Amino acid sequence: MQTVVGDPAKTNLLSFEPAALTDWVAGIGQKPFRAKQLLKWLHQRTATDFSVMTDLAKDFRAELESLACIQTLPILKDHLSADGTRKWLLDAGQNNAIETVFIPEDDRGTLCVSSQAGCTVACRFCSTGHQGFARNLTTDEIIGQLHMANRLLDTPVTNVVMMGMGEPLLNFDAVVPALRLMLDDNAYGLSRRRVTVSTSGVVPMMDRLAQACPVALAVSLHAPTDALRDDLVPINKKYPLAELMAACRRYLQVAPRDFITFEYVMLDGVNDQPEQAWALIDLVRSYDVYCKFNLIPFNPFPQSGLKASPRSTIRQFATILSDAGIVTTIRKTRGDDIDAACGQLAGEIKDKTQISGRMAAQRQEQPVRFQSRGRP
Image 1: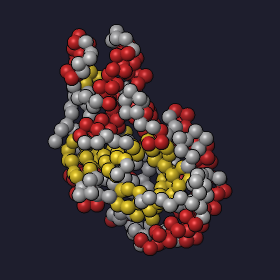
Image 2: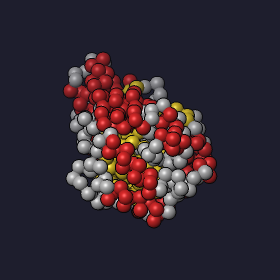
Image 3: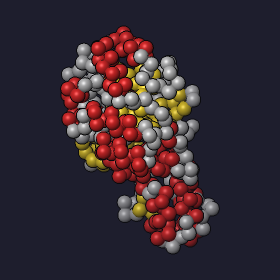
Image 4: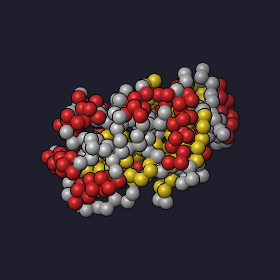
């Protein structure tokens, strides 16, 4: 098992987005092109020490060695599923841990990245929210998950989803620099369409993301009415559906895709009835939000008091949405043979660090498209 630990007294170069790295390099008397060289070594070649950076002058490498480090979170556990899904439990310090998940498919490899240790949003169906909040991750801890995955995997990550532990938009100042590294051609070079931020609906930060770094957006919706969403997703009390839908409409003006993805956990007898599917259709039509729905089978845990919808109910719900012209996906669980083990291992560190209910150790079935733009 490989871990990378640096000197805490030194500057972790993974913490710098491209512009900030250029400034740092200039601050130690080096020319701007050195920053591009460093970016490629750090993120394209996933270097873990400066000695391998052979196209850098020896005196510059020596200076880097004295001032800086390349540090990712230590790996506590590394699990590989029979279907190829891979999960890492990472030590976030002070008895906290986070999880990072890689989901391989024939045409892509998706990495699910965490942004916080724990979560403050406290959605009823999410185990992380029930277990509490420890702290925000730093930029280097966020991008370090991608650095680690590309270093350890045989094939590179092609897609990133910010759907791991935490609410990304409540850690905005650390998440955005990490996103910029994911997109930069001298770093990971991912397209905006292949990087997705998932949010429970932090409206002001959705608008800020649209201005600062508009990547693909997924919104955890989970209910068609304010009354139900207040109960399931408490942040709705602060940013109700009218404000959320308006923010989605604004985001579409700059989004790299022409739709918003709505995530919808299917809860037996709570939000899975036909009339609620029709209410969702009315909701997105009334705000003219181009969208796609991901229906997510619920993974029960004792504290939630909730049960998973039967498969037949999920399919009926999906059919109603699809028949109305909305592109609809039912997620199929991946890596279920290692789900319980990962939750137990996180519990060995601290109960609050067990895998998020939103952790994407799941894959999408191929959606049947009823309209070319997914318009409701």
